[in-house]
Image 1: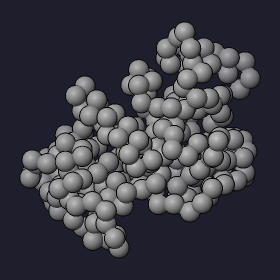
Image 2 (image 1 turned 180 degrees about the horizontal axis):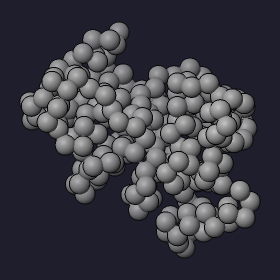
Image 3 (image 1 turned 30 degrees about the horizontal axis):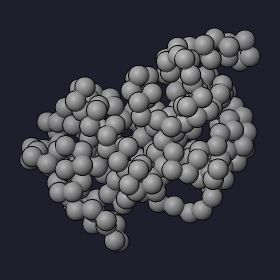
Image 4 (image 1 turned 60 degrees about the vertical axis):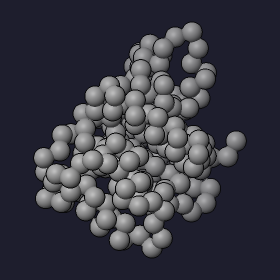
Length: 228
């Protein structure tokens, strides 16, 4: 199996706070890798390190080759008084050879008929636009931190279908986090459980048998209490 990203004993400290401690993960090329953990577990910190937005305090990150990335971390940022199309037009103007048009990106995320300023968007609509912005350069690796926030059941299903389409047709490697475990179970191919900045376990989702991802997560969480 080819891994597009691996980490070895990756750690991050903020003064006296340890956000990550000795995290070693392996993300297969072409996978949909889910990071699962409670609030403050270190998922966003790990994503920021993988994207090169922060420097590790210790440990290392290896990649199989250079690649383009797209990301949503925490809240996506926009020009609030611009429409979705204008925000995308500006984003595409920064890319040398854009793959998609504004219309194609808006169609992908279900925003093709919106003309109002982003200021008036719901949280779910902003999440959709954030994903469109992240896809503008057709990234080989897509990193999404809580992309389902604020989406209704129809929106959640549409985003799941979009992620599967990107993964299957474009072979996009996707790294995402979410607290909606039943949806993660339908979406991801591999999972890493994080608690208090440490990796409890990672495995293909196919290895979780005879139980739900939610039940498996809580069982691993209990095991981790004895070792963390």
